[in-house]
Image (cartoon, rainbow, N blue to C red; front, side):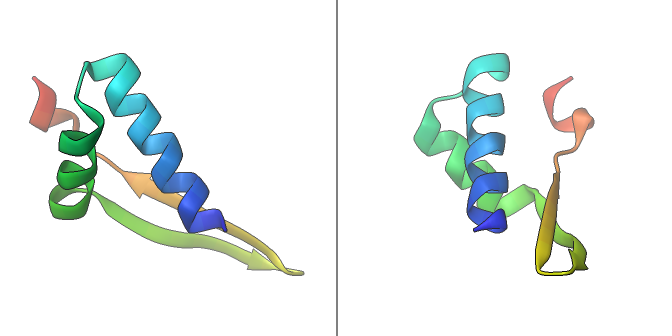
Length: 57
């Protein structure tokens, strides 16, 4: 569930803040973003995604 939420949040960010089409944003995340589990404590799971700023300058 946390991974899905992280991807949806990243898609929303790329679409709303960077003006990307959602399908292009999804392809970008698949190819260029890194997602990692950042927290697994007491059944709380955290996932963070890293998007390079250099890709948008």
